[in-house]
Length: 319
Image (cartoon, rainbow, N blue to C red; front, side, top):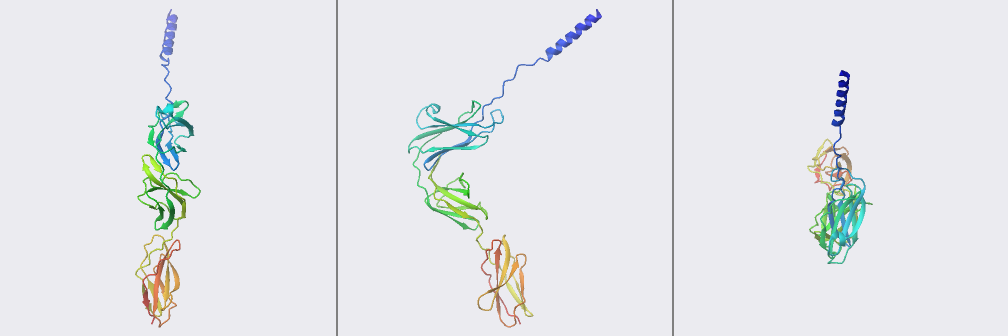
């Protein structure tokens, strides 16, 4: 009897263990709807309409997306956007900046454009539609020039306010150098460094909400290099003693100084005596002879070989 009760107790414990380990109701799958497109804008560029935006990286639940589609809907008549608009789909990668363009409709046409992401049949919400009336594009600027000045590139053109676009040689034009149109037909690009080559175009601006631009101007290219001479050295002095002239000067503050050049004249053309390292500020003229009065000048030379104008002269007469 005792063995029977022991067996019943074991079976009860096992039954409870099985019941206590029973799984609950299955959890619903995580949402797979992609996040919405961000940074969506539409612009008129010459004879084209252009839309661009940034594809999402994750779903609404935070799961990473793989390659998917962005749907663009464009309507040129009244009615529900999805019913009257034309749909186009682009394959995109997560986080990619996408771009699509169309021929510009006639001036006065009312246009609406929106975008959404589609992944595995799941659709994000549409971006708020960009709606506007098409404007006649302005005339493109002409006579674009690009030149060098201290600190960068200076551009000039014929025409009014414009946006400036820049690309490396062999590259492509993308966003403007400055998102705000220039106030007049000139622009200084101080964000370039010597040793770089760039090409520029400018587009006249007739509106900013949305952006309405002309076709691009002709292209102007320039190789950026230092073509500007340093300042002349100051404090040049010449002291004659024992048939030798000791020439000295104040150190240059030019950041790209490479060397100095010392010149001497006897009333005629100055002749170079020596190149002196930029770390030194004196020179001994041991070739001077007793009798004549010498005039000494010093120039500064930068790392690109640009030489300053001569310093103020300093005179000395060896005795």
